[in-house]
Image 1: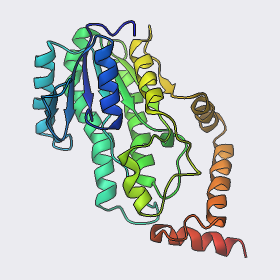
Image 2: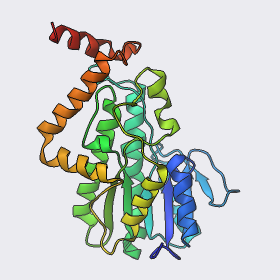
Image 3: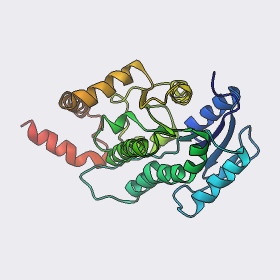
Length: 274
């Protein structure tokens, strides 16, 4: 892809589903790539430095090592993320804390550590958020909250550094990935609520954001995604009604009957229908 040859790129969550495809696409386009992930792997086609992104002391050193290896930095892709069920009506637990740490604070830490190099190169930052940042679903409050917070952080960052560093947010929908395993195991599969899309489309959207003449503010990964983003932004009450109708259909079909975490919502739904 034009504009990537020779560019120096750091990708977080490089060993995950998006990360592997993204690193392959970047290197295939001629970019020089280093990854950060919890588990180190320097023997693959892209060197991945081991780093716990939730450790405030570890991130600056890992980013510095990556930048040193690359000889500078033109693009940071904050891709690392975790999911899991978390009803909004229940008190936050370790699942919630970890999603906030990985999805929001890790991206914040990594960006802060990388900004001097990015500013020197007049580079770019791309945040991989989620459609749930603007179109939230019940029983996954931590994921929606953390991804919406990432968008808020990106917006604030753009105001502060946008004269020198481009800031973009990409909004995937649901991609087949281990990130959904714990949610499915809790009986809260997103099947029938969120439409699957190919990982290749997400990677293509990230690359579009990275190579556009001017850094785009928000990037949807599909035509449906563009419609959903517009609906959530300009007609939020209508978007809420559509989500409620979809969830009500799943409840009526018994899709959530075996999910203990959905018990409160099921009870209220049935009481409301009497």
